[in-house]
Amino acid sequence: MTATVSGLDSVTVGGLAASTGLSKSGILTVFGSREAILLAAVAEARQIYIDTVIAPGWGSQPGRDRLHAVVDSWFSCLRRRVFPGGCFITATSSEYGHRDGPVADAIRKLKREWLDLIESELSIAGSADPPGDAFRIDAFLSAANTRFQLFDDETALERGRHLAFEVIDRTS
Image (tube, rainbow, N blue to C red; front, top):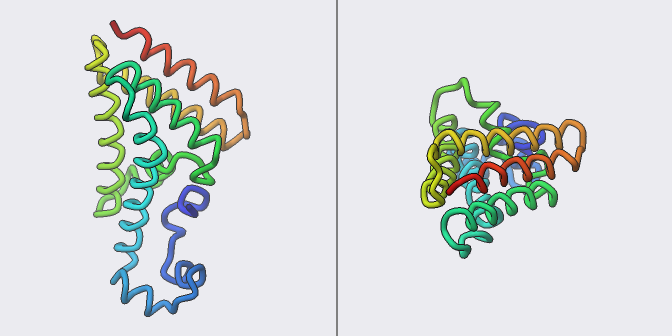
């Protein structure tokens, strides 16, 4: 997805028309506006995220086992470059964190869903501080993503995974 490499703002009517072979007016007939295109991109990224990160681990025992599986799937997604520029949520959160509007709201909602999932599973696992532990896990994942993207550093992925697992494994 172009949005993780060049930013979500790089997704344009003209670019979409060129990549699909449709006219700009044809694209606008389908979507109605550039904002609708960006919202569709966020929705598509969310579905990819569900399919490649959440679903593979969802059958695991709730709590610690599920968190291990979801974190493993998240790192697998990065390694396989499902999103060529890394984690869509991390990339777009940085790009849109200071903005208002429907696209920024959709990105915030996606990030909140991710954090809520981590917090919920940490709570099931017996964490004494699910919001704090979710913050730590999210920070380790985001840092691993950044180092992997900037330096093509595979060791950052293992380090991030190990540190996230330490947080998970400290739950009672």
